[in-house]
Image (cartoon, rainbow, N blue to C red; front, side, top):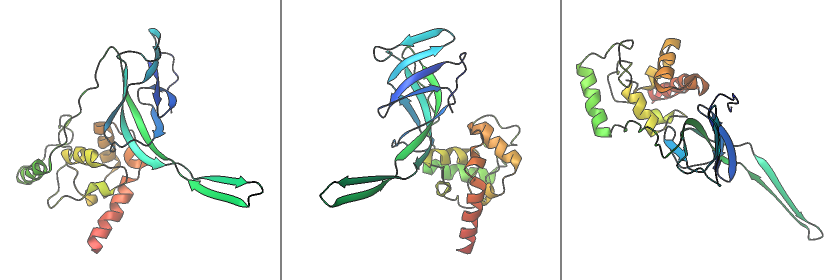
Length: 228
């Protein structure tokens, strides 16, 4: 998943005791961090930066350099078996272990003390309710004419579903989807290929909706709600 084009700016960072060579849009797998899916993270231990303009080496770190990223997913590695035996002690022990991991998408490589661009603040619950009431009273803007950051879909009437029940959606991402007019499971279950492409483009998902099967999960959750 790493970019190897010599014309692309890259960095070597240290995270969790390991070193990673990364470039913008790379996805790396590191030991679990506590940030929610969709949250921004930064790596301050930058050992080297390279690209078309040459290479800079740290001593051991490059002062003022930072690599910014976004949490994509939390998951666990495949199980490994740890077997220990003490000879002539009649002692044997078998244990299984699955390492907790986090996938992080690299968004930017920053130098000279530059800071990552601030992300839009998540809407508070009270304001979400206000926005839902306003959306019911006024027609939603056209998806093709909506500027970036505004609703792409007509917000459906009724109480919003807990979209965090869909694997891969955390509190921050739920807020972004709500801002696009997506609030219910049945709405996601009815997505067309064109709808999916609009979301991918608006949130820079690069196929994440299909990869994580949001539509299939939403259909199952919507069916559960109807059954209840």
